[in-house]
Length: 297
Image (cartoon, rainbow, N blue to C red; front, top):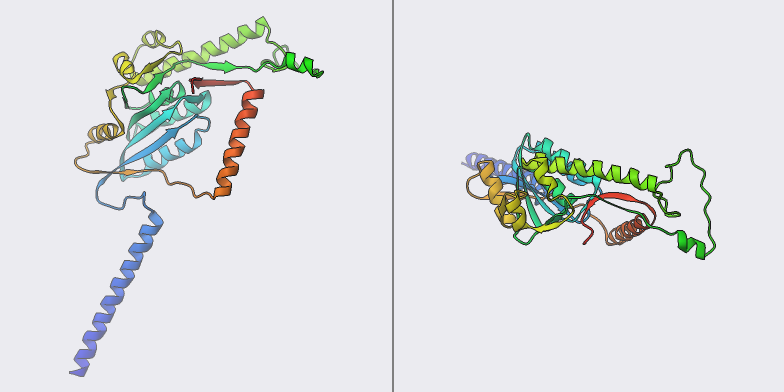
């Protein structure tokens, strides 16, 4: 009898050890995966926020690629709240959205503002949902030059420039642009504007002529945009999620997966904000920059 009792206790001890081990493995797995991993049996939709001025496309592109490869994620919702930004950045995101759509459905949810470059990236998606009062449109290009010639004269500073060609210092803040330079810049703006019009026409299934009629930089409401065919549906973020579910055939509840937030210390955050603000001031004051951006913000 003691032998039998000993055997039973041994078996129970082994089973207990196995249960404890499996529990620890599950705990470690949950810790590694993090709260955004969604280790449940419900279907998943990835959510990518695009907030503020669009100057760096890399974080959005990285997340699009990551969600595209994730087999758990059935669709992607882009939450856009942006007045636009750099031409190149908007075009890079637009292209990656189009590539992503070959594998997953992409829906845009517009927040308070999705204008100019904010609308440019939205136009790439399968569907766009906007609030009736969303500020959108502003299909156009802007380029600004700061002029400091008179100020420099007043403080006795002159600048000598040696250049290889007539247009090498075009846009310099130290002198007014010439008529020939203005003609060149207008030609450049027209070309990049045509790229914007083409992107919207392709993304929305509209004719270029129809887009050109409203591509004069005007801002419009979400309700007006729906009438013009620039958005598909009026509604909020949750309506965009429901539309994404419908497009990919999800029934019932869905889990939303957000990009993981990078851990950053308070000092890093302060220095990063200060550096970004200083860079923007220097950029605005010294360098001409071509933008798909609504300057009302």
